[in-house]
Length: 113
Length: 115
Image 1 (cartoon, rainbow over the protein chains, first blue to last red):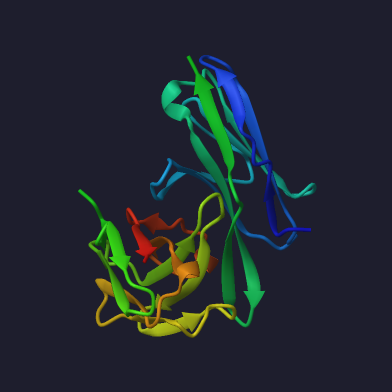
Image 2: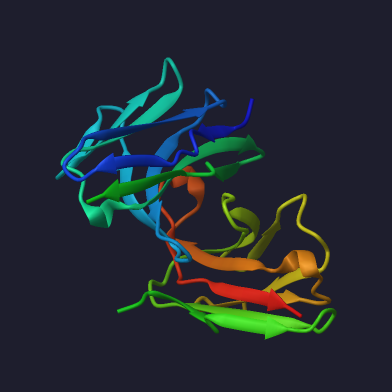
């Protein structure tokens, strides 16, 4: 099982639609979780951290399910500008006082007019 | 204003010719990272510095080296680039190590092409 796994998509959705992405992680001791967005040929940019209680930022909602080891990202009222690749990122303890940050391969979203 | 700055944005070098990519930050963060990202793949961590302490990933080729002369600057040196090293190279920073659960801030990246 891959450490951090995402459906690569692409997800093609019409403007105004609601779309949800899931990301599963294999290390049950994982500690911190993030969603980044990456536009084509650009750098990853932090979208939001994911907290145990779930968190919302405008049209974006992130949830964490530790029991099932997945995080989700919900985008409501999709805009054309939401078209990007969404990267799931997980921090895990890797031993000897070190922590490892692992990226998923990303889920590509295309919002269509 | 950009807080993590990478230069150049695009770099073309010849097969086997050493190349250096640079990264600077105005955030005064303790940790600086170098990633390699190829098309449709996740960023792959090459190494990171926690302050002056260098941490190499086990699978990073010896061809890749790094220097951090001060808090603000970090360099990626590729001693003998091969065709397989063509990629986007991303520099990132975080205030503290990953154990503190802090996000990383990325520069715009340098896209390296090998002729």
